[in-house]
Image (cartoon, rainbow over the protein chains, first blue to last red):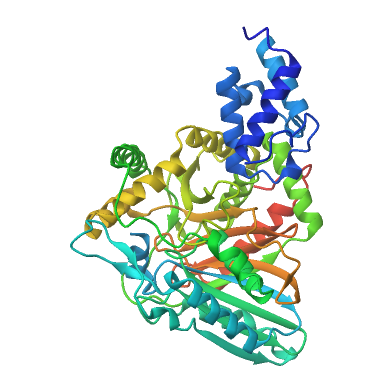
Length: 86
Length: 430
């Protein structure tokens, strides 16, 4: 099931998750959206990471998240995919 | 509970001051008119804590006819060569207690020649929190633009007088009790409190980082802990500064414990939740021995931050705080005194990046800066506050003069600022 997740489907789920968290309009977040530019607060960012960990059953902190990984949903999705494959 | 506790200790209560610096001169008459207009539109500004036989819990009572009460506004005109006096005037302003139970806001407008105006707003934390105070400046500006009618229907003025969601609140209370129990056993490094008595007024030091320094700090923090969150790295640097400067005068302990503020509003609720307090606290700690480097401390604080968010501690604290309304004060204050054997924490810390005021101008004048001067609780008698405004960080250290002297406070600010702006590649001195 975990392996069946494609990078595109992870990106799509991440975009939806971010839109819900920040009360943004559907479709306003794309895989290349600059996440820091959205003005996401610390608490919201932690909530996002915890939601991702729960949804995809990966531990991003243990994987060793780097700052560049959090720049866009595309980068985050790549880390999640790598985490699922590990 | 926090207000009562603070009032017993500092004679004032749980207050802060938000200071807005603008270019040019703000009109006294226009400001008075707007404040009267706002007081009429939002009578809760003159509310007070009340109890009656129908409600078990105290509630915010708005008295009929109180809407005409004025929000105090004092004007001070200074010559340009007296500009330095403005800091002392602002400090005096935040230290003075409110005159009555239904006064929760007051303003000081300092006009420096024709060049600059400084508007200090002291606010009661029961009416506004730091973010709400910035939104209140926005409310004033909206009123100045004649747009108060657009905003006021969106602002929620009442909270239910009764307590609801009992099961959830008691479960939160249980989680909080467990947390307090964990904290009660800590031996922490904290400043020595003076014997009870009349304390001298609190002092504040203020410094700003440049835009370049702020960008570099955010970048360095992100690279240090792998996530775009400044709080753990900034808190690690504040702990480092306290360890370097105050270890000689603070009580020795095994850990540094800090309480940090967290704004728990949901995005989009800024106007709706303008009034009342929507901040919560997170306790974070690091071992003093073996003495860790800044990066190690930052990573440890990041892990605690995530762990506490997993347990939803800020939301648990807010839920449980509603129980404080029905908890007798003496029980609540005893519970609080359990924390770290009565020392509470090493210092309070705030690192706030989201602004409630984003307009370029205020009442037609260009905005220069916005920062906060919190009154500090005792214990611990020390508060370190960082707020970002327009891409620059303001650093404010509030301290009780009876706990540390002015020279030590200046050294603390110097060390904190220097370690914040130190390049990432440079090894941190120990």
